Length: 154
Image (cartoon, rainbow, N blue to C red; front, side, top):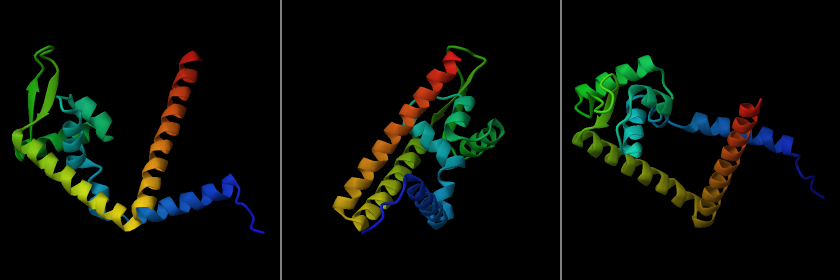
């Protein structure tokens, strides 16, 4: 008779597998979640102007880092900075047409890479993976909301 692993044992296995997964990711894949690409994709997903502070928060980089990223993206002609029409003290960042095209290309490349991975998993495992990730997101969002409401009440 097989022993059913405890949740703690499964947690240890999951942490080892996630570490292995992280190690298997190429530097290009990891770097695409930070820096210029992350900033570009944040603007693309938002579909509207963002302040440098909002970009720093959403791309998970420091405000100093976002300033350097924006300078580089601006030099490449991918973003524009302008004063807000509502509050002239505020700067807003938007994608240029070239920035929009670049972000669309990056999104398509990512979609194709992930689709290739899912094909290797097979349709059943791919569907299970998507279901589990969706469920994980729901659980984590629920925990975050609960922690926020408990923290607000204190």
